[in-house]
Image (cartoon, rainbow, N blue to C red; front, top):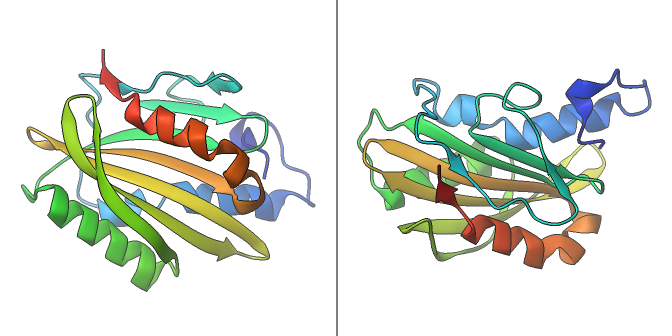
Length: 176
């Protein structure tokens, strides 16, 4: 699953991997179908060593921040208008249900997390797309009238070696 799917033309042998990577990250189109992107106060992460930060218009949109590693770990920060005016528990539960019931993911763990002066929920998932197994970390925060998510998607075989970096990146959320 090359992380630079939109920067190069995929070969037929990797087309399924590109599609799988996009499906892992792009679920927000369903979860927030009525939401509007709003990155006026940019929410970003401290880019970890071994990752490169990509311009906003180069990969998965709409996002406030994105970075990728050479071994296919993708980090994203999204900000969506909270038209439903839900709290962290509501949004965490709604997104978890979407991933479990409609996307076929398995919930591995969930815990409270703090980042950028906000309290949120961090959930860990596993899911298969085709014959590839992925890990997906999702932190949900509510700030004023916005829902912020920090997301990390990774092939399962590279997750364990990147887990500390992913956790640190999630907790590095800050605003510019």
